[in-house]
Image (cartoon, rainbow, N blue to C red; front, side, top):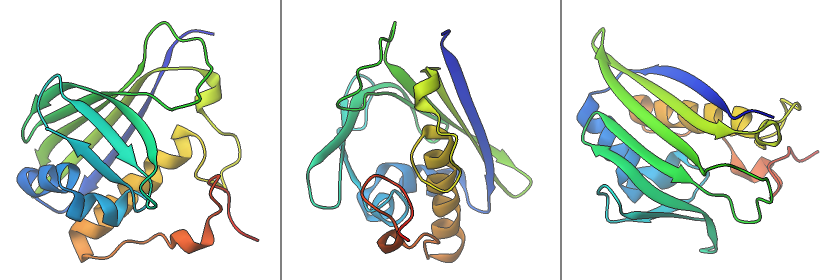
Length: 161
């Protein structure tokens, strides 16, 4: 299967600088990114590491573009991924001032079919996870509150019954 991309855009009533801070500071990240935290030196070439709420390592990668407050890009490697890939997946966030707010454009490149989930009632799959994260980010920036109750999710990303 060929490499594919997933693209998602969202408009947020905020400034580029506030959005940038929310994307690079754990006091914000933990509010909208499923209670995960991120460690990085936040510069091009730096490692980026994601940690679950219990402190165990999750995803990781390297920052490939760092242009505050306009572009943040990093490789995105999921531990245990046995998919044969020609290269690591890469996530790019582009921030555009627009209509008194910002447009945040996410592009996740070099994907395979296994990266997507057909079941819409889960957070598994990039096509379910990214919209949830970015919707939560929007809510945190606009209202100060997240919209997802993570206590209603199983560890595998499915909904509790």
